[in-house]
Image 1 (tube, helix red, strand yellow):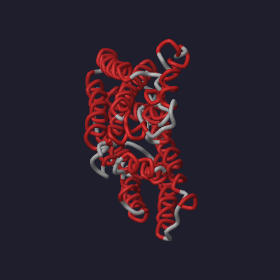
Image 2: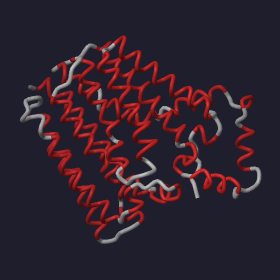
Image 3: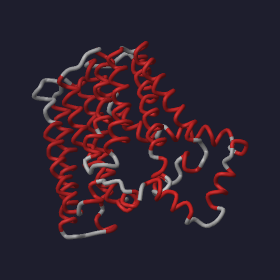
Image 4: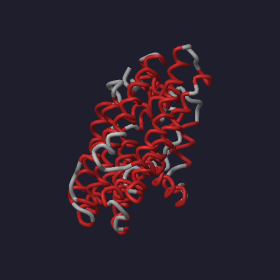
Length: 325
């Protein structure tokens, strides 16, 4: 059965009036303005964008070897938010069928009816166009094309091609989330260098062990809609082993900035300490998986939450290091 067929079956199996009540209460005349504004903001996934900006702004400090022009920082942040927001809105437009069947996405604006699919599509395309022009006209065109490339990669390559077809979806689809590092550097220098490439690779190897623990937690959601995230098709032991492998490569790559001459003792110390704790958590997850621990005792979300803290600490060190050299 196709995904659309699953969706129709699920809708028809709901108690009478459930979907109809939601649709009626959210008709155009009964959607409060404030709630509508909040819904459009939710389309941009602000919490995810916070993480993208954490990996963009510190790289601008590294590229400048000091404090970059604050107006440039503001324009880059606004452009980055609009671009990532447009990508996220288009992602929700494409995934609205499976979002309605997954518990953790069941309150998204398209599912609740607060925003219509047509409005979401127009909103996403508008943000994509505005962000590209903003980057090109106020920052530089290299940053504009990188930003547009990230958006198209996320929407077309990850959401439309990879997500529902392969367990490696998040590995290669994660490239879109790595590009803000290049955008941060190019916004200052209008060029690229080995430093942003190294940090790009850090984020590339960070993405799977960041996302797979969450996927382990909500594997039933993904299994229900036929999205083959690695934890859906593989055992906890296999997933944990992959997490450990990616984690070691990520930490090793993070230490390349100093021998390449871009950072000094402060960044190296922070990278070693934060990376060491990451590896401790990753191996802990693997040991629990080997013991065939399941449910709450697996504690997979410990690594997920630490992964966000790790990348924040690492990139703050990237920003601070130039002032201590």
